[in-house]
Image 1 (spheres, helix red, strand yellow):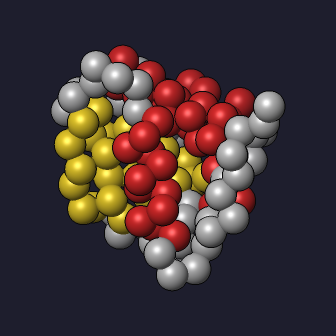
Image 2 (tube, rainbow, N blue to C red):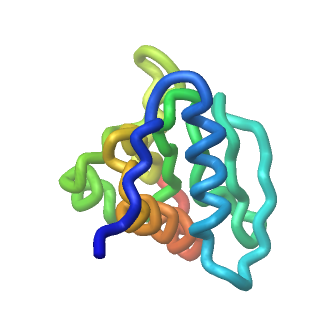
Image 3 (spheres, rainbow, N blue to C red):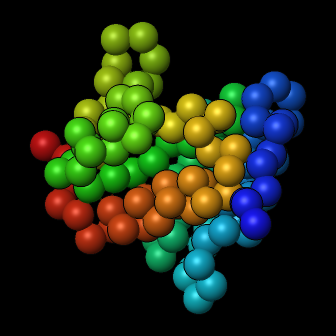
Length: 122
């Protein structure tokens, strides 16, 4: 059996669809709070930002800066706050098509949750 695929990954309503999927996939027992920031809906897990659902269906992920290159190899892109404004190591954007699959989305959510114990990005 394969994970469900969510074809509404981009366009109107993409953020809402992604946000609901994030809610459904955050592991039970975690304190979760939603905050609007970074142009999206951020998910604070145990009081630290883990991921944010972007308006375009992309996912902003807080990561351990030491895993930056590894995670770029999975299709993530360096996160920016606009043209010529990189957010630095420890912040990645995962394009919407790469989180259409629940298994992949769950992986990225866990990366964001795991980052809470990582040192701050330089």
